[in-house]
Length: 246
Length: 368
Image (cartoon, rainbow over all chains, first blue to last red):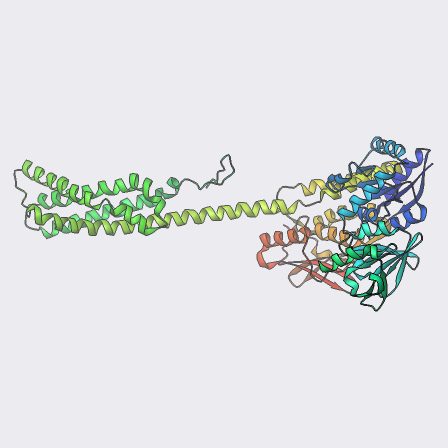
């Protein structure tokens, strides 16, 4: 069975997709979401194989939802939109498909044939997420779980990020958030302009650094404005020094 | 006056020939009166002498200057009219012909006088040629200078007048096309989403799909009315607004409720058609389509003194501190500006309960 998620803020649009997907026999609709944040939550919770995302939704647009997904874990993405194709044309080669509203069943069947052919294709979904990140300001806002829900925080308030097995601790002056993502994937979303690695399992917001203090044997210590000190590994030293002098 | 467009779409000025015909006639009449007066004065001053002598002397000179005037009105204007905006050049180009005029004046006019006098058995007595030339030249220069001044005043006035009329025409055409553009403003996006809703409802509830299709058709017909100047009774405006509201309710019924507070005595007031639709559209766009909360809306029409106030209120949205007006609100404002000048206004305000967009229309005349 192919597990599908439908996200659209109009009930009739959800009902139509739901009806036609269930008719297929090999597709199970595991969740329906009526806004972007709930769609993002449902993708984390249900890990569907394919997500049908309306572009224009309250909270987060379909593109913003895609931009916040972890590249390797993202479902196949099908954008469904009444917008002119301009917004989604960039996905032509990399998302599974985009469907312009209104659409008929034949059009949906074409999409479903592609979905069936690519359920094991990992590269296409990673590049679809990358394009969505480039098209939205995904480096400025990050979706984090808090009190059982997802919420958006400004990435500028993040001080540093710590990797811990399969999880990330995202530290802000107020609190820390726990994300199930890899450090490499998060850094690619946040962009290398503001965040830089200081050792294998930690990265720091360049703007949060107060000073770099030398230790013995060429090691350094990163002192943050909040008073926190972190160890700078020799391997990432050059890069950080170059960044700070820039 | 027809404003024509050539192939590349540049608007051309209408030909001046038509516009300036009237002042031309006036100018010739003035000139004829001037000639009559001069001849009359000459005849009076020669009282007691033979009448034909002053007549021949004056009219030969007048005939010559008349030829000069005709030349200016035809050939001269064709070449020098373009300098009307720069008086010094205009006068310069005319006055460069002055020496030739003086010379030919003396030759032609005195030739005629001597000839006619001789034919009638008399002798035309005049000053010696050398002293005559500066005297006649000076006189002619004064006359020509005077009349060039008059001609310049005439021509520049009629050009200014033509440009003024042309400008008014342009402004009116612009206002009309602006109104036409402003009044048909349903977003394509709205149509695609509604069509998708209808397509979905066809599988879920055929009756509702049918009703929605009829509403969409009627709204489309209303929005395709070409004339943005159309005033309709408030009752009709509210009916169109209701069509839009019904369509949006079909799409978002689970997330919005709409209340209506309409002053029944104002239903005959005449208002611009489809004026409130963009305001209601904004309420949906900012509160329903962006927010996750359930939204309450209110459509209101009330009289305040002699004014009519139409308002859309909604919960669930706020005005950003540095608000950039969207197309809908700007169109609404510009349309009122074209129709009512400064007598109508659009207000956007926010209180604890939400956002209100309101339109104040000046006097509300009942439809006859």
